[in-house]
Image 1: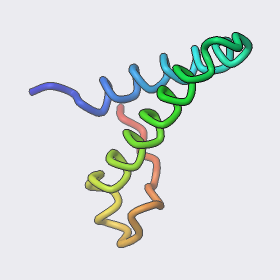
Image 2 (image 1 turned 135 degrees about the vertical axis):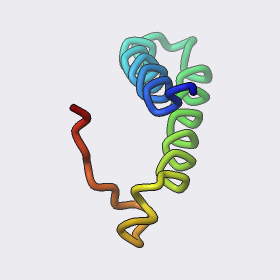
Image 3 (image 1 turned 30 degrees about the horizontal axis):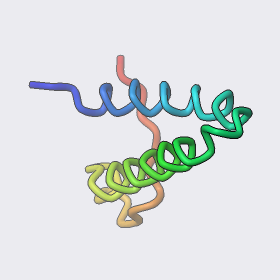
Image 4 (image 1 turned 180 degrees about the horizontal axis):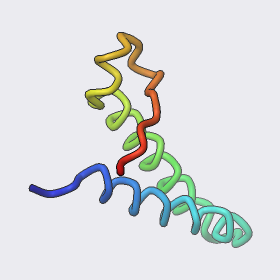
Length: 68
């Protein structure tokens, strides 16, 4: 089965890494805002659909777990 958590983490980390350098380019402002909005939207979906959020009863508080 696909590891969607890992895919999410890889994509979001890459997007987050390129946002800062792109912000320094005035003509990239619109694209930066689109990336930032997509990143925040994906984060909300991830948090709201995380099985860990159901365990705590608080959708925006997710306990971190270390995979061994």
